[in-house]
Image (cartoon, rainbow, N blue to C red; front, side, top):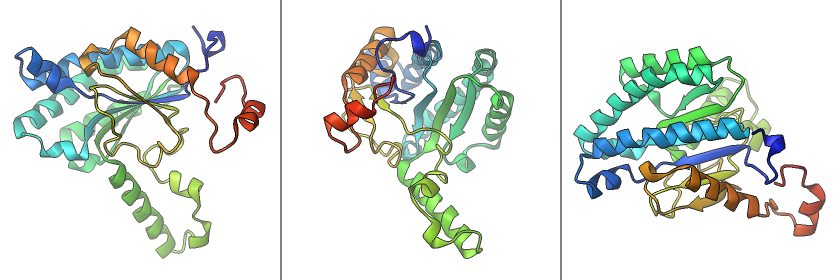
Length: 252
């Protein structure tokens, strides 16, 4: 089904905070690593559904900058899972026309993982389908700070005038540069907070929180999130009457 065949308005860009893997495993008496492995199937489902429906971009919060403080065993397991998942999934992503990009501070990742990420990004760089961003070692405040540093360096070198810095200029220095801001954020795991994810880019994003743990997230839950989005009136500071006059086929 294409976007044009869908009656309800769809988000162009969906962001997801995949929360609840550890709790899912604990409820079953399993190691937390088992929950992270189980969470791979909902990732595959979301990629398939976004590609099928014609969603342009999907950004997944996989590992935050704060997650480095978790037990060393869990962190090591997650890093190993990232290596394994990239190796196993990149061929399928490439065949589906998905363009993969990893966002976050990759300098703190292992040399091996950095190399594998770079190879996967290069392999899929020219694909014209779904743009898939995986946030690893990412934090919203870090993102804003590194953008400020980049712009400050350009100003000091004389390349950029301070007066030329506006919102578009700043956004172009962020990790999601070149993409429309997310229209919809989905967070699983029953938490109701943003947790330092895409702080700049979520300014006008619709926030959808669901109680299911991430490994339980399925096509029905995804459809409910899209139904929630379709019912929202997205005014961006305008009145309802103004927005009705400006709304196009996407209804946002």
